[in-house]
Length: 211
Length: 211
Image: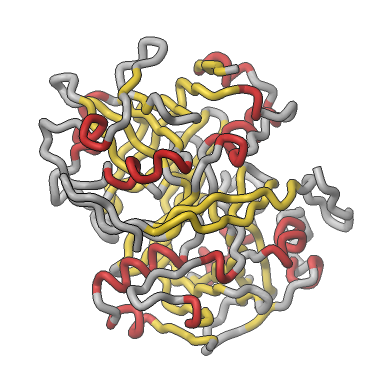
């Protein structure tokens, strides 16, 4: 049945219920594993699902880190090293990706703990996920606290990409279904998206065409 | 064939190619139609695909608006009115949603132009999309320019939600496949995601279970 939820309804939800509900209602999200290194060269891996487009030229990607009140290895690593990687998750590594969210000790590498392989590409110092089919290397450009709730806005510039170019169209579009990239809803649900269609550039009073 | 793209490779891409490429490589994104009103009560609708989770308590959602150098009706409207709506796009309204990106004149409502219906719920002053199956009303909380490229970070608090509660699990999780919500890649490709699985909360040295 159609139902309306007000601010008061949302505020009264039990904490875990509200976390599931609000994280889901925003829609489908990309899942990326973020690879980083600490000062001793130790590798770290963590899933982030708040990845968003900031710009194409220069190529900027944003993400939100939870409040720094608990020990956030990723945030601390990339503040110090200034670099990190984003790695897509395909259906065969969903379990490992999900498990990398567990709170391992700082001297344990999530790569080893969950069974993924750290890989270094083209002299870039942060670790990529070897098993991943789409890998991005980023340089940190901005860290801004969001005062509303203590989360941290992180923006990086893409400086390295590894991908099989067979799935890239002539106009630069990449059909991520060909790479089996997954999408997520909420905190723990994994999806395989299937292409419906691409549509032509929208102009007033002109019919859309399938591309 | 696996290929590595460097900063120089990305910088040399033709503008449109790079826009498609960078917008796609970030992964799947939610698509939401943003509804707003101008000072004269005229309605406006525009697709945004850079929606991201900022927090669950209070329920905060972020989005990125392109640079304010061209006339951005949505940005101008929500600065003045302080409210807006987010409306999910299901497969049957993909064409209308895509067409709402066209640059209509300020006195033309995209609702009328593309054939969607403006709906007002529970006294909220910004228009929802009647056809949409998941509707969120937000109050503006923060507008912050991103100096790196002139885009604008917008954060709002969810104060109203309309959804059929049949698809909401006992723990608050919402399987968006039940609402036929679409995901997008890049600027123009629409996808229907299919659930693979939900996984239990990850803890060190404990096996994951399907939820």
